[in-house]
Every structure is written in C-alpha cells, then in structure tokens.
Amino acid sequence: MTKATARHILVESEQECLDLKTKIEGGLDFEEAAMQHSNCPSGARGGGLGEFGPGRMVKEFDEVVFSQELNQVHGPVKTQFGYHLLEITSRED
Image 1 (cartoon, one colour):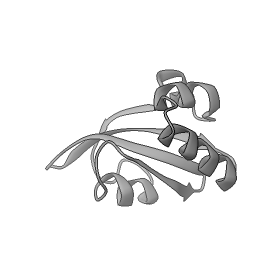
Image 2: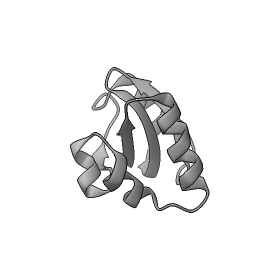
Image 3: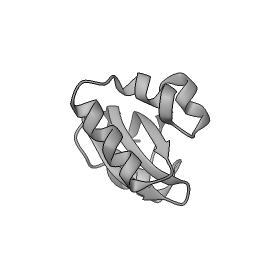
Image 4: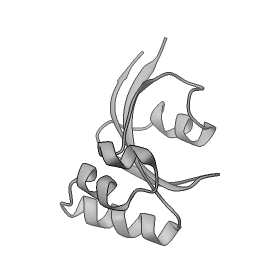
C-alpha cells in the first residue's frame, strides 16, 4: 500500500498562503514558518502530519501528496479548512 509523509501550513487566505510560499522559496525554513503561521495544531510540530495512506486526509491533500514531486512546496491547496502549503517528505509505493 502506498504511504507518504508530509507537512503543511494552514492559513485563512490564499494571499497569505502565496506570501508564505514566496518566503519559503526565498529561504525561510518550512518548519519555522509552520510554527509561526499555521492555524493547525500540527504547526507546533513544524507542520508534520506523520505517515498516512490514500484516503486518510481530505481529497485535495491526496491529489497533491500522491502525485506531485517530493521535497518541494506545493500550493496553495484549498480545502474546507482554508489554504495549505504542502511539502511531501517521503512516499513509498
């Protein structure tokens, strides 16, 4: 079964998400950004979501986590919770 590990940052607006993505691409540490800006309790852990398989997260997450490149910042990804930046840190098929 396919499994992945990922981390994310959850914010309220698409613009805030885009601004954070620019800062991370410019050198801001993803974990630090998650601790400072994420509205999700996982922010206290640098945005870490642990290991999970398909169907464990919302559909929008799965579409990114199980198809996009590793170790890159993806997003904004809009879900019912807000806007996310996602970084896939590992994936096994």
